[in-house]
Length: 486
Image (cartoon, rainbow, N blue to C red; front, side, top):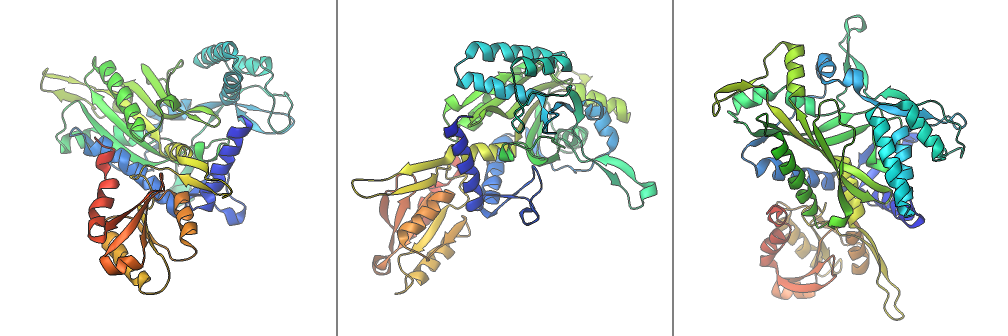
């Protein structure tokens, strides 16, 4: 990460705390590593991202429905899915600092450094060698690459590394009231399995015909050894996943469809297409016959925010085998029973939150002549903004607060609205800019005379005078989901 990017990332993290987006969990007890809480503005932004995904995935598709499955699941589910035996990351320790790292992430960081330094040949060569080692599960070769490329521990600065070994990421706990009768269960490391085990329940009760999808938003838990990059990698996180069930033989057609559709969803927010890229998997997971990541260019390099996978019939076949229950679908169009193939779209909500925050954050110099001025603004899409409008009486007297409250009561049933009367109007504008509020409504003495107010637009800072009775329509049109979901 360059100095400028490093400074930008630190500024965003600081801004997230200062303005109520993200707090360190258990901060008054010195925090809990890789666990974070979402503040008042963060919770609103997070919910708006969920709503955007849910509307695009479920509401706009007649053949996709949503569920909410339990976090606790029968332990045999994770045996069937392969998580008990194969849900591992390659770890390496530095003998001097006693710090543990993911071997593949150390190599990815070096690849990103080569790319920033325009050493493209080295970056491509190392990427190919790392992919080959991961595909072959050659842990010794991963260590050799770390040594060959002179990768040092960020803490000790030395290259005194242990061997690379696999580390299982699942959290386990005891299930039952009495210790002698308790059973070991796992906190789910992904939300997908709750969809698979409910495949027949949803298909039969919803009278679903293939192709159809099941979507879910929910918490997942992974015992990440490496706490890094803020909310990029956490031990408790949230996923937005959709499993799309298709007829065998059509999976690549649907894989390509969802690959394009999901990137369009990201770009609809107004993000530059240059900030995104596809990254095809060199090493496929045990369940997949095709996989691609949608990556976003963060200050620390391109990182995955969403994965699209063709999972074949692995999951349903495994659950059929381990449960003894048939997971077949009768297809009336071809008069056949078969186990459907699955196309998965899986997006990390917390990573999408960070992406949204990073992309919206701007430090602007507004100086003009001898006048020194600046502002920090979050240029969030109005649909995602935690607060849609701020009601600001110009002064705290002369009936202006009462008029402002009247307007707030009119709007607050339909939109998240805040009321502010403390400090100068300029300072109040700056506070709202910093949390991404797209519109500020100023109530002044003229408002009492002709029932008009001033709307100030966040991005342009331009102001316009409008009638109060037009506010419902104006604000409604500006923050309508129709602006995103076309």
